[in-house]
Image 1 (tube, rainbow, N blue to C red):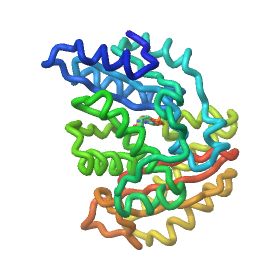
Image 2: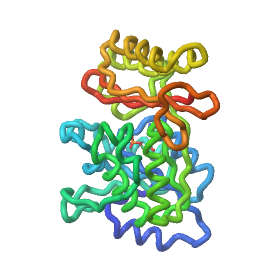
Image 3: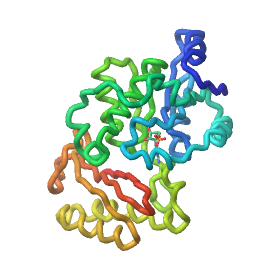
Image 4: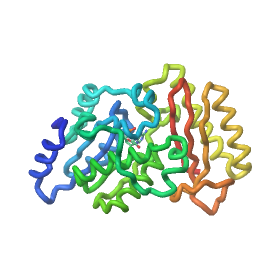
Length: 279
Ligand code: AMP
């Protein structure tokens, strides 16, 4: 496994690859956990060359304090990646990706996705996501990009980016890995205390409460109960939305003729967690 920090070296490596080799790419912000490893293992099973980026992208953080406290443990990440033996870790510095600074980035027309759910609560977040993925896709031109359904709206955004900028990359959505408690694995879980981690599992339990009663109650009523469950353990819920899975269009109540998804965000111990489950 090679660790590369600059685009020039990465480019030289990619140019030497035989044309028939397929490249699988997994963008991450590091502080790796088994959820990330599941994406990497899926890529290893399908592609000849697997590249993982580790880059905490400043332009996708709408709060500077969130950016500053985001866990960064590059050396430990590299050691972990050595154990599963991928080909390349690409870990550029901020100045490598943003030589002219981070104040201005291009605008990406991703339509309503920019303004709903995470887009509404984290203004500018998806513009930053689009930019970094656009940069990486141009640089690496992978056959496949693997992304987790934990960030379900991010998948829709990157699919849209691939269409509008005509990237030739195929997006492979991967299922969410969870702790035994049901808590979705996340780098941000590292910021929680032991008791915070235990309590955080209530987020998924609250979503499951809505899902499990969807045939005998209204969404509004179940959402209230879910919020109460979460508040009782110390969560500050931000939103829980019921959406049509593909368009992410919000539904006022259950419509069992549609494929639905519950999507939410909530704070515990000042850490913002997101999760989503199928209904
Ligand atoms: P991040 O480092 O949080 O930006 O995540 C990098 C990639 O890993 C994204 O495509 C995420 O959706 C995915 N990912 C994060 N957490 C999980 C999880 N628990 N299960 C599966 N994929 C995940």
